[in-house]
Image 1 (spheres, helix red, strand yellow):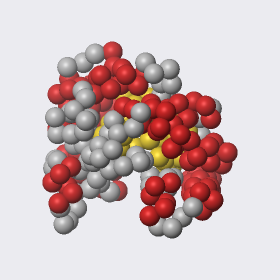
Image 2: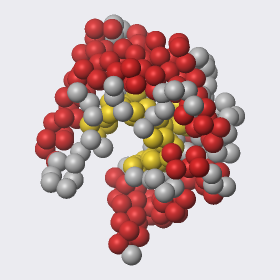
Image 3: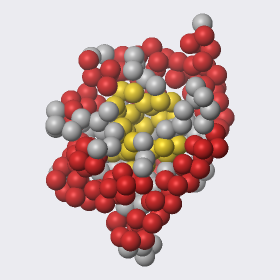
Image 4: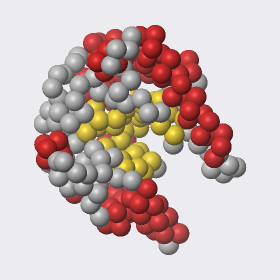
Length: 246
């Protein structure tokens, strides 16, 4: 998966840097073109590369400093979604959603644009969304909105924070197709105060993903969030491919 570097390329964040709507449209299109070039350089028979337009939250990805109703969220994110659709992305990947209202709004915008979307939810150390909503409840609410994502993703939390929630099981776990976990076991509040990246244990994180594979039958997208780099991704690949081969 080649995600565009556009997590903050929406209106409110652009305005902070002096970018207007036209500037953001150009930047998002250039980001898609960059990922298309990556795909063209590295795609091989049997190893397709998916170009994905990346969308982040309107507010803080660690905390719901502001929450939105679905209609407001759809109106806010529709411009970036439309640019991605017109630029020819294969799908849209949403990351670090803190509340269901914004997630539903983006899903509606993607559905209207005819683009598949994956919905990444931020989790706290208790395995709940930052609003306190249980993960299962959030997935069921978003799925029941009439604009269900293609699949859900968990991101920006260490597997220790949500493993027990997944182990409890339920039909909703089959809707989780991706995990991009943090290297660090620290809370979001602790990470906000940190002066250095916490890279955790790359090999250990790889083994954590093997355990997640057993809990998530639909898991296909493996990646990293805060504190991860190429070492963590290599450890995930080595551990999960070894398990698959076995």
